Image 1: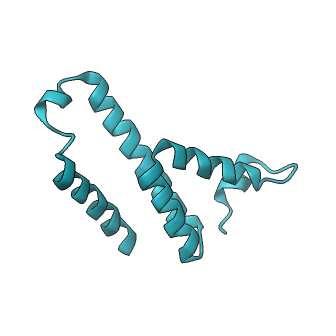
Image 2 (image 1 turned 120 degrees about the vertical axis):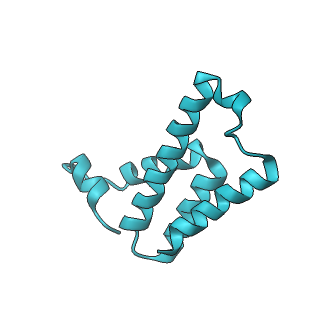
Length: 100
């Protein structure tokens, strides 16, 4: 699968360009550890979800870039977009488990 490699490449590039966020000064602060696991866990989960349910490459790349460049705003946009596509009477499972 090509997409996990590109995600790891993006994180690696960020660490090389800006320094790793996993240095001892930052990791000693409980809020930083929590933030890193919370944010990157959510990014990874939504990113894999998008690559699973989107059938065409265009939306996959668009949402991957939105997550990588926009962070939380990109993630909220994706969730809002999925809710906006809902029809009356659909359950959350219908909305989020339907492939596109």
